[in-house]
Length: 328
Image (cartoon, rainbow, N blue to C red):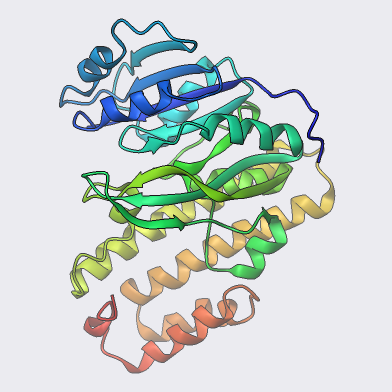
């Protein structure tokens, strides 16, 4: 760690879609950052007036930050939107801020300091405080990972954990120097990209208020609104699709970096295989005859990170399918 290293310049990306009610508070928290930054507020062609609310929120601003407000030409989706913004940002470090979250004033400063102190870090996240729609704190200092997460840690865990995208700072080259980011959810792909070419880190302090509401993307992907078979199938189908996108992204990134050490390339492909296997197991549970579960389950039992999950799923061979999901 080199505490004397100069701080890299930071671009704060305030990323919004259908966030008219919260965008002004999110922008205000970006403008309150103690570190002078470039701030790009970008609306993904929302139909609800988010763009106009963002323009109003910065009208007359004359502080230390360089601020711009823009809108995509058409709705891109989160990953394509983020990739587009990476081409526009001037800072080598991108600090992501969803248009419904609240950045604490020291956030950009702390993340920039951590990036300077840890030059191998490609993604640095933090703990967060969960907050509700009225800014009330629901839980403090949650959703963090260990201080350092590398490829072997992700493989050993097998729980498909990642640095929470809402808390991320990342090197811009993680987007500009690797294949375009695809899919609906960015955080797992960025965490694995970071582990492939460097490392992930997580600060043991809350730097944002992470707003929980009915439209959280992660809550949508992991919908547990009820314990019905139908909800279980919808949730599983979304996760299967996303896990395959993650596996494809990691394979593309490995192919794009033949200069990396062979061990990193090998571990990257093993991580892609783990996500593809997880998708195959989940898909089998809802779509295939029971005898065809055996192949994916056996491969899962042979994978160190997926053994516990695979053993638990093996017991489902004895249960009616419509019971699946009743545990939440």
